Length: 434
Image (cartoon, rainbow, N blue to C red):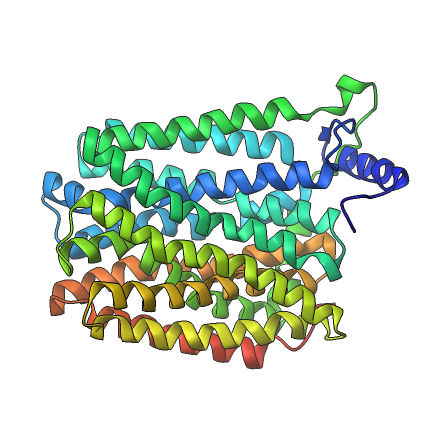
């Protein structure tokens, strides 16, 4: 639907929003409701990735202060993703059944607290607790976003808004290394955590002030029916009985493994393998991440155009997804063999550009393989696979670095995992979940 939508469309959107567990946006703005919601969700996604990758900007300083090895640092980096993985199914069920206003507001405040606790951590155990709290509070954010996008955009035009939503993660990783590297270099890593916590709190206040309760306008909200335990268990069993669900989860392992490999270890790579300072490493890390952001947007454009040419929505997602994973796997394995920093940055940029395409295409694929009512739960299942990749990437990379002393083995492992994910998507996602 175009930006110049009709008055009847606006009324429909207003009614649909009121059904969203009592959540409602003012409709007098010249910008359609769907784009206001999308803009706020993009901001939340961007800040969430600045938050969750903040520790990577100060890996070396944190390891030095607490006396951590590469293996121990990898375990600490993976703590967020471990808790995030466990929370995906509950978060998906909650996002499918609860409105977005108070759920996202609560998440934003909670992950602000987690970052402030990181700033105050007096030991590695305190930092570990804060990272786990961050994993709990950030688990629903992209599921809430996908649920709202699915409601407001029809399948043939859904890939582009999902592309912007997913690209917000790469945008966060573009902004994060530059901004946080500068803050950490000037004021220390504790000030860096306090700063990003304040960003999240500010967005929470903006969200709650714009996304209003319909009672304020005199309309009565339609309260969602509380989910009964037996219904929840039945829904999970039903979804997990399909091979497609498992293929989506297994395929997403490789997508997020690559994303977290670069997010968690790229500044460390430039500091240890290329011998740059923390601030210089932050700026260099932002270049490939920007390519990932552009790739995320490109994935939505490509998918939408293929769908408009008559491709089925699933095929329009699957084809660029598999091709992008193949490119990302090969280029990642080539990184350690680059003779210069410039060449390494170029190859990493190609890899993250392809990863961005895969991220958008993979996330959109989940929305077209199931009906709207269960989309967040299916995406949660897929994201559990992605979270497993996020757990594996810091741990396996840290162990490989500790064992070999270089990134060659770590990049080879990432390439093999990504190739396996491409195969899973290719052969396992041909059946729609009825």
